[in-house]
Amino acid sequence: MDWSPTKLLYYDHMFLLQSSATLLSFFKGDDGRRALILDSTIFHPQGGGQPSDTGFIAISESDIKFIVQDVRSKDGVVFHYGFIENSNEELESKLEKGKEVSLHVDESRRKLNSRLHSAGHLLDICMRTVGLGNLEPGKGYHFPDGPFVEYKGVVPQNELQGKQKELELDANALISRGGKVSAVVLPYAEAVELCGGCLPDYIPKSSNPRILKLGDNPGCPCGGTHVSDISEIISVKVTQIRTKKGVTKVYYTIGS
Image 1 (tube, helix red, strand yellow):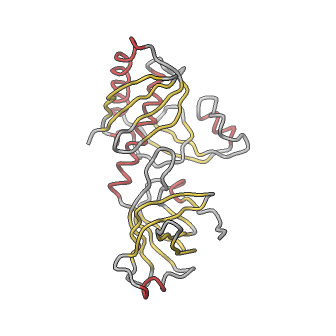
Image 2: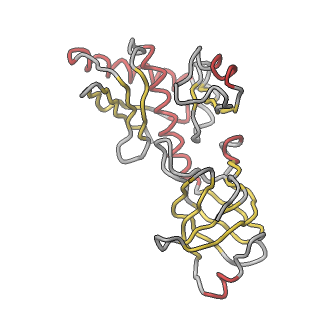
Image 3: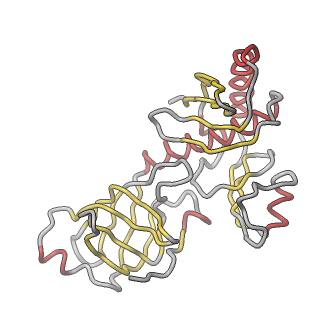
């Protein structure tokens, strides 16, 4: 089936945990999982190194609750995977196109994911301040089981230990000062200016990228969710810097 792209409400409102939407489809996929497709969502799908939100979707004027276990995006359409609480055929028959629903994101999971993701971007900023700005940012992995940020380029072995300590100190200094965090969709030229004069090559010049701004630091393109203030990260510990096969990885954890 063809569905229109899902409107991503968290793009403009990162801190929303509840919203309303219209049900477009309820079906069982080839993998056996049940899924809801809505016209809009505040659930962040897994991607960009960030795990998906979880929570539940309630069907208006009924006692139906769809438990959201996983969220994925394909070709601009967001799929909410999960199950109906206390499901039976009668309940499933009520999940018709056009039904109004209310979305409820799990707050504790969203906050943890947002803190981990924001900490990764903060380390990107500090890589420049400790003299490693020549390394090209790569992918990030912001899952609780072992977050890291990756850079193309090699740090000499004899510099690794010192850079690890500097990076941690600089990151925690920024956290202690705090600063507002915001995200905004901008025309390409304005996005370039906000990001210090350049954007990654994979972003088309005809696009309007979403730019994340942490305090007064240069912005960066990102589609994820983040804290509202840098201080909410609490603290960062750089557990390891490892360089291998032309790639440097910085592993980190955050305080509780």
